[in-house]
Length: 491
Image 1 (cartoon, rainbow, N blue to C red):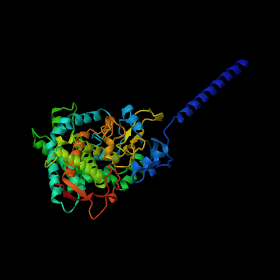
Image 2 (spheres, rainbow, N blue to C red):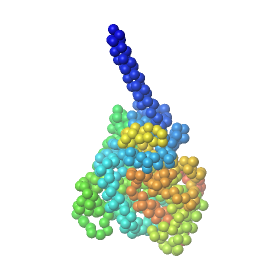
Image 3 (cartoon, one colour):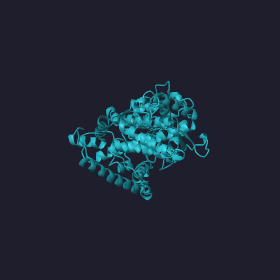
Image 4 (cartoon, one colour):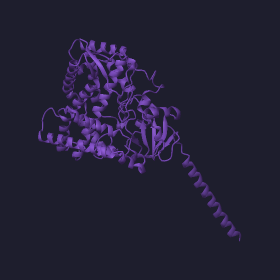
């Protein structure tokens, strides 16, 4: 009897201890420290809080909840980082853990199953295509080799503006034409003018920036079909594929040994197996489309914002004009070799990228493992958004952050190449943009020449402070209304 009771007591005690252990373990698991979270709704989560300007909405939320927030877009956990410290932890300290891209249906449709550099998932394939871009397409020597194209297109644009002096011009149209022609010649070997090509690129960027319900709330994927988003994406992908197929076929039948464009180089890499793997036709088209779309869109919008800010700030415009005029020494046009001496020009572009970050939320990342981040537990498969715009306007980092003041960069080592996390227009780490050098030389050359050759004034007596600086929404933030100016020759 006592033996039975003893055995029963031992069994019961062991059972109770096991239950307590499981309960404590479960409780500790549920109480893992996660970042602050704004209140969410069933099904949609925090989507209602994004508004028409997501980077501004998320910046406002971060002021209340902190530099790291855990939100939910539908069923997807999304970590939002809004401080330089948080960005450094994600893109440097834990860069490998956050190097993946989430799978998204629209980039998949547009970019051959995300076979490009920007949206392809992290892994061996991505390393291979990134290496092609860095080694063969966008290295310093290759960028320098296209100097003549950039300067020729710049001279043509200056002539076009000169021919319109005395009347109101849409400077935005001239700038997009300039960047489009440079990228076309560099990537494809010749320009493709006309509204049809411009319309194709516009449609591509528009569809790429539209929010897809199916990515975040699978049960609402029918909205993407009902709204026509899926059909529009497929049509843009089909139209661009037909265009790029024609370009590739043209290059294959007209091989060149000199003055090679990026398609020529990619076909050489494919033929000679220089990449170390089999380079497929779809990969060539995806890489070209990636470089072309990103190069045209972000470069153009940065130039448009820079000149808009200069028109609004005559003091800054005058100071920049003095610098470029002194260095030009009476030459009819500024050449790329002159740019290195133009420190105020470089400060002006940095300030533009700070105040008007082209892709304010960068491209989303995704964690591939559990990570301890700034004292918080971030589980695997959490989507990550870096609010580069919020960081660039953080009052703890920048004095008078909403003011356009290029002087802040004259005695500062802060740059935009991914080593200073206060300024991240091109991202950082493994997923940083490989085309920074190419984009910046176009920006500097164009801005220097426009302000060197012309005085710009707003038409119809509009005062500088009244210039419309409202933004569009989308993956790239453009100026909503075109920049209309009166241009008069300075010499």
